[in-house]
Picture: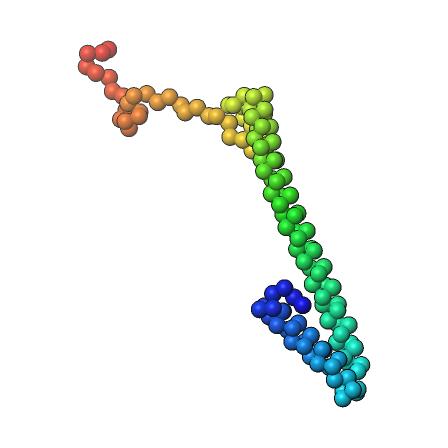
Length: 128
């Protein structure tokens, strides 16, 4: 019997198992349905086997997902370490870093005082 009898699947299996039990209890009255009854019993057994297999696969899937998460966490730490080594080797401002998906440090150009305010520098009357 399925673990979750409230699901559609559970209700269907419970219904079919009840019919199969009733048929087995009344085999004398329903001898003409002996063949289909045996077929139903075999199919219900197969459903139970498949349900067990499905549960095992679901557990295996959860274990696999957990392992993937562990590996992603470990590789994240390792990649951080490697990126630091790459920057140490090439320097933090080397354009070669782009090849590794890293952003090189690019200094801003120094602007003169007048250019920062948006005004061009003008000469004063006292200076020549």
